[in-house]
Length: 469
Image 1: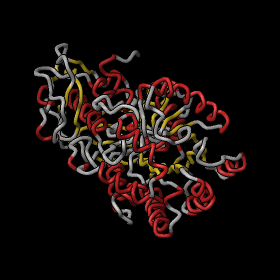
Image 2: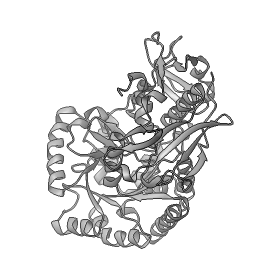
Image 3: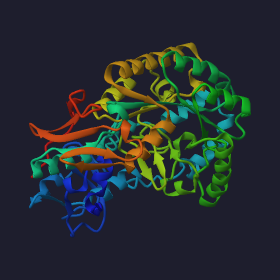
Image 4: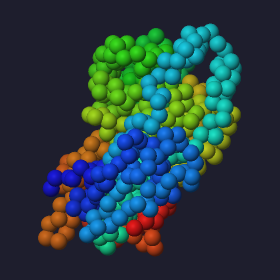
C-alpha cells in the first residue's frame, strides 16, 4: 500500500507496514526551525507547533519537550512537528552553518597553504588550539549521538502504545545480527601505502576484512599491482578524495571539475565508494559523485575540522547514494589529540552503539599504526571487535556489503499471508522479522529466528524513553 508522507520516515527506518504507524502532523508549525527535544534523548531541529524554538543549541534538559504536545486521536498519533523534516535536518546537518570545507575560511586557506611546510608537532599544536573547549559543545552529544535513532524509537513506542499491539518490522541487519562492525583504512602517504600489506595481515589474523581508501593523485603512486593485492585478498578499494589537499568542497565549480576526475578514478579503481579527505563534506553536492555509497559524514564531529554530525548510527540515503557514517573516533584523534594509547574510548562507543543495534564504523590509517605502540593499540581494538562478533552476534562486514544490504532492505516488504507475516524482496532469505512492543513503558525489540521460532532473541532498547500521551 502507498506510504502516507507523514509516516514515511518511520516506515523507511524500521521497514514496517505503513498501516501500523499512523502519524499526523500539525498544520500550524512555526515559521522558522530551531532546537527542541522529544523525550529525554532525542534532540531535534525543525519547525514545531507553538512558539518558535531557539536557533542555538543548549543542553537537552533545558530544551522544550515536544512530547508533551503529542496526542492520540482514534488510534492515530498526532505530532506537533514533522518527523521527516527533523530526521532530514539532522542527517544532512542542516542545523549547522559550517557546510563544505573548513578550508573555505581565510584561516583554513592559510593553514592548508603552509601545512606541507609544518612539522607534525606544529600541526598537532595548531589542531589542539582550534579544538579547545570542544567538550563544552552541547550538541551533538559526545561520544555518540543517537538523536535520529531515539526519535524513531520514541515514535514507534508511541504508535505501539496507541494501537495496543506489537508492530512487525524488518530487522536492521542480515541473519538477525545484533549490530554491525566496519573497519576502513584511509591511506594518506607513501609510508602508509607501503604498510598496507602488513595491515591486511593484522586484519586477517583477527578475522576481519576492511576497505582501503586510496588517494588517486599527488600523494603517492597507485599501481595496478597495489590495487590488485587489496582486492585479491578479499579487501576493498575505495576512492579517497582527489589529492587530499583540503579544498574539495571549497568552491562549487572547482568541486564539479574535481568530481569528474574523482568519478573517473572510481571507474578505473573499480571502486563503489568514496570518502573525502579530512571528512570535509557538503551533502547537497553529493549528487555529482558517481558512487554507490559515501563515507564522509561523522556521527558527531566535535573533534573534526568541520563540525556537525548526522546524529545517527544507521546508514541512510542521500539521493541515489547510501551514506555509511563514521560512528567511532578516528585513530589520529585518539593518538594525537587525546594522547591516549588505550581502547577505553572505543570500548565505550562500541558498547553504546551495540545497545542501539547500530553500525560501529572505524577509520584507522595505515600511516598512524606503523609505530609499535600504536599498532599494539590497534591490535587490542581488533581483539575487542572479534569478541563482539563471537560473543554478541555482531556482523563483520566491508562497506560494499553494508551498502548492498541496506539497499536490499530498503526495497523489502512485510506482507501478511494467511495470518502470518513474511518478508518479500531481493535478499529476503537473509532478513529477519522483528517485533516492537511496549513493556514497562519501554520499547522492546524481539527478533525471530530464521524459521520464525524461538531461535531469535528479545532485548529492550536500553535508552528508549516513555513518550507522553
